Image 1 (cartoon, rainbow, N blue to C red):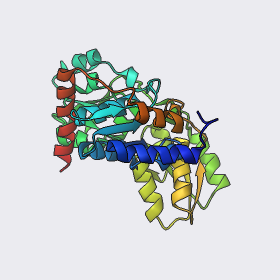
Image 2 (cartoon, one colour; image 1 turned 120 degrees about the vertical axis):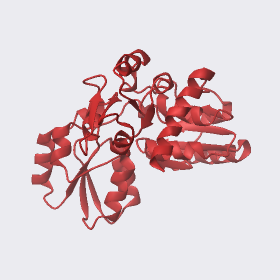
Image 3 (tube, helix red, strand yellow; image 1 turned 30 degrees about the vertical axis):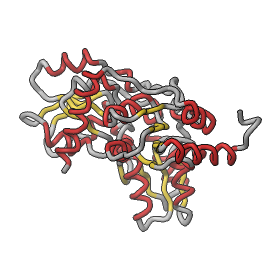
Image 4 (cartoon, rainbow, N blue to C red; image 1 turned 135 degrees about the vertical axis):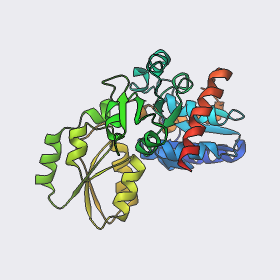
Length: 306
């Protein structure tokens, strides 16, 4: 299709279709700039979860991976939720199963499902969290100072604050994008850019987190860079956020801690966003009972954070 229509023509068609069909587009920070350009909402998993819960559109096109589109569908059962590419599946989300959650909960301690999980897993959990609020959620729901969190083990370690013990399930769950970063990368960055602050995502190894100046979700990193007096930053997360930072904060410098790409996120292209909206295809369909139970876990997250 790109041989027939230019990028600008596709973008104009998307805008026309959004108005015609009362549709909105949500895009995660890891999407390409082309996809971000046509989005009505951009952000991290928490921001997009909030946006999804407040939508008044008839159609939602979710530019992210499978669990994100599922979360939008869970929060908007009366809307048609579309995902541009059905192959955009998060490998980390697949590391945690409903059976693993049920087995952990036999201990009597609450289970926190990272939003980076499928609806079937959220349905078994007591509550959800995001990378932006994991520590707050753990503190709010821990029983006798203990709770489970999965599937990202590094996020579980990050949430172990104020005496709260957060047990990861599975023990070594990880995001390959953030697992790529090493302490050696931070040491090299400080030599190459001594004036810069190092900011990283909590899915990075704990040693990398401890060697950084700031640890936060993608949008927390964006806001930190925007408000900091520092003028240059080395960023430890997926390259899409760094591209957004360079575009939106033009008076500061941004360098990747290491070029790390989420292949699955990049499967959403401008072309398949257009086709999904035009043909209303790849609708996210969930079992009603699972969706309702998953919704309770997501809603409880919002409640404990109020």
